[in-house]
Image 1 (cartoon, rainbow, N blue to C red):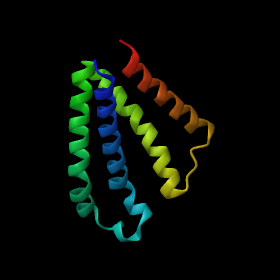
Image 2: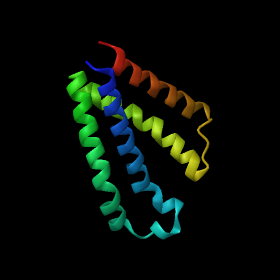
Image 3: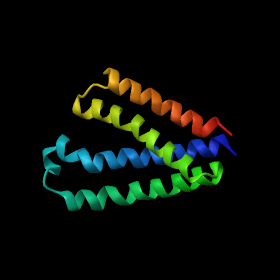
Image 4: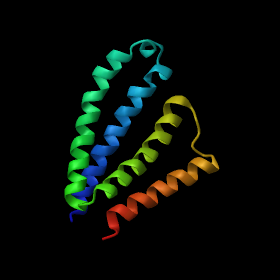
Length: 116
C-alpha cells in the first residue's frame, strides 16, 4: 500500500467534490448560472466524473476495500463543502455541529488511510 498513491486518490476525489459543489451551487452564487442547469451539467459533470473515477480507482487499488473508498470519499466531501460554503456563500463552518462533522471526517480519512 502506497500512502502517496492513496493521497493522490484523495486529491482526485477532493477535486471531484469541489467541481460537484460548483455544479450544484453556482446557481446560488452567480446570477448568470441561475437558469442554466443543462449547461452546468455539461461543463461540470465530465471533469467531476473523471476525477471521481480515477480517484476511486487509485484509492481502491491501494486500499483494496470498496467500503473504505466509500467512507474516504464521504469524509472528503465534508472537508470540501464547509470551506467552499464559507468562501463563496459566507456561511461559517465555525458552528459546533459543523466543526464536529469536519473533525469526524478527518478521523474517517485517517482511519481509512492508516489502519491496515
